[in-house]
Image 1 (cartoon, helix red, strand yellow):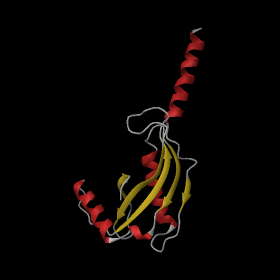
Image 2 (cartoon, helix red, strand yellow):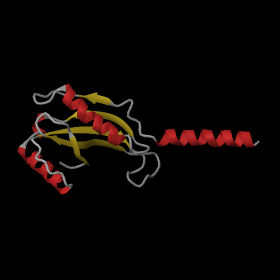
Image 3 (cartoon, one colour):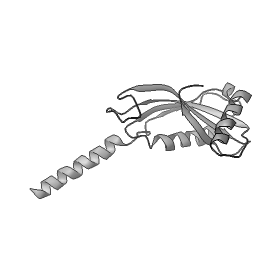
Length: 143
């Protein structure tokens, strides 16, 4: 009897861990078209989205897409440099990129998300110096 109880608990624990893990494996990627950034540039930023998203328990990532070249402008660079400085980064970024994602929140209330909801056009903002590595500075709705 104890053996069956232990197996049942192990199975429930495994299911719980699987159910709470973020799912990024089936996310569709849309690179759009860009005169500024290569697929490799976008892949580097996408990898950071997936890394961050993987820590969001119970969320399922559906898609990531490139927003547009228009986002790489002086107004957005100024805004992202202000965010960087506010977070103690002593660097002046010269390029920025915005990715957008769609995802589904956990089925039960996790405190961070509206439960069982589809989030669309969730923005991810990155900046870098010319040809450097992307720095994920902010994400969410707005801008």
